[in-house]
Length: 236
Ligand SMILES: [Zn+2]
Image (cartoon, rainbow, N blue to C red; front, side, top):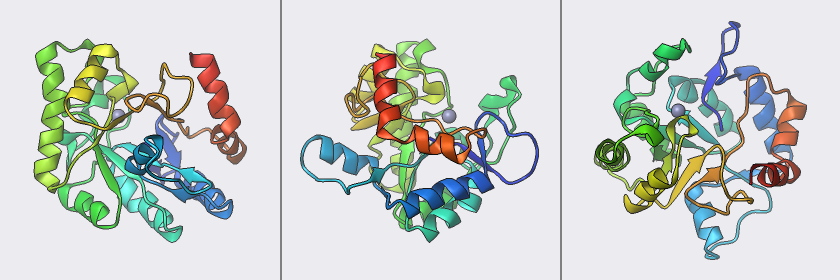
């Protein structure tokens, strides 16, 4: 799980990874023979309809920052990798205003045309809600609007089916999850999950947060099966 790729030398925010680190991480995955797959493909594999490559990896970017297009995409292109971007419907072509109260850096988000180019290049788009709200705190009507409303919005804008959702702030509970299932999403990404295995709950897929402070050794450790199994055991 990535957010923003930072190129300046300012102090890294919690959700930024430097271009240099990102380059090293993707270089290592490439060298080790990893292949990126889509969440949809993982879904088919969970249902036993497809076999995955020997070393599959899914790369996701939350919030849809312009830096994904400017900096991450050229690096991923070199390795023939694709990724999934979780867009905040109301922030397309705008900024991450939800971060204002937390004094996180305010960054430009990709516009409609850029997102369309990602789709043309085989990337996937998923929903990250309409306004990046903490869904576990919303009343049913507002919750439905964020989940179903964002699906309809993105489907009309990009003329494709939106099958994946990502909980803003990683905040979800049973009601939120039920709503996501009812809205017709096939899978949802979280940061933590009640399931012991990574793929145990397709509507709360546990992801690994790559931080700006991670060195290459941390990165290798985080994407190892051992780490994922350990987290599953610890979080249960
Ligand atoms: Zn987010």
